[in-house]
Image (cartoon, rainbow, N blue to C red; front, side, top):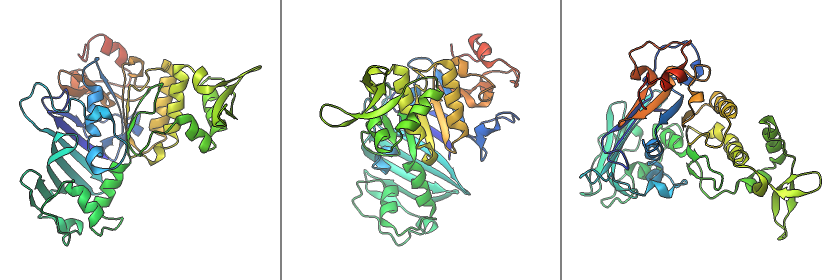
Length: 369
């Protein structure tokens, strides 16, 4: 799990933006939101332009140089903060995997230009490497059973990635476990046109085709019906002989994508990813409920957080979700004035289960307005 994350000089973040998953209180309700001493489920609020989407992109920057998984063009645009005279963006991740606490820090000139990298496990420095000078320090390679690995004099890829693919490590090695976690991180955005995602997999999957190929059409139909979208679905050939998903009506059949509303298309996206969340380690959903009715947004959030082991952060403007019936005060966060703070850290009042958090928020109790 991710314990802490910090980023600075990246996109809209000139100064350090910090998220601490250990910063929770001793609430006795909705305990599913805390796991292994870390926040497991969180909702992030903030005004338009506050940086919520950029924060998600920052969290998933490590996907670009450590894996071959899906990346987004948005990750490379306007990479360095425009108000800063510094030339490097800095990212610091603290992971908690079993009994190991891992700190992975790196600096980049752009999305593809790694300049500095260091790895520390349980306070033991494993390595650091400067890609500009091609000089490194490797005092803890024996700690990960990679002491026999020779690091080249002209490194052009991440040292961490090089270790994983070139050292003879077994599946119980903490480096392998760390990379398994990173490979299973997933970011996706609610959209009605494309399956926009980062990490976890690779390729431009057409959602309806994927559902047909997986023989999940009737399961998807039941999913829609459960959420009060009363479609009857089937598979038919189009004029080119290609299988397409159709909605059957009394007298006519229509291509599902052409007849579905924006909300129904968003449900298609969620159905596709919900099938795979059991294998995800960390999930960030941007613009979570842009096309959902409030009650549906609540039901979906509880479904994906209670049924899955992964850490989950969603971004939203929907204050109906800010309720102790869904989460708890220490799992609601506001991005405001260059900081991310949980609700208890935004007020001197002691927040309790009986408080109406949404009403307090709209009344200005937590700032962020």
